[in-house]
Amino acid sequence: MRNNLKAKRNEKALKQPELAFMANCSVTYISLIENNHVVPAKKMRQQLAGILECEEEDLFPALY
Image (cartoon, rainbow, N blue to C red):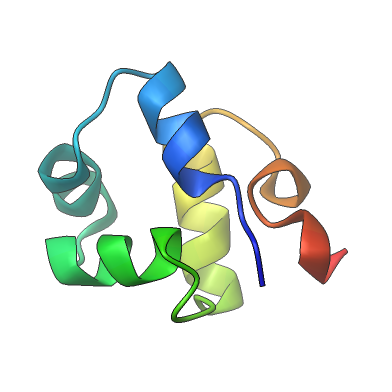
């Protein structure tokens, strides 16, 4: 499932470690999401959308 996490993260000029710290998860987990290897749980999708100041649907359009 494709997502826009990397693009949105880059728009905010955040590096993976910075986003991982803000989301209280590992850099590996952020990488797995960006490379479409895992689909994060609803709570994590909401948290990432909040950090990146966008709608959850913008990050993960295939789920909606």
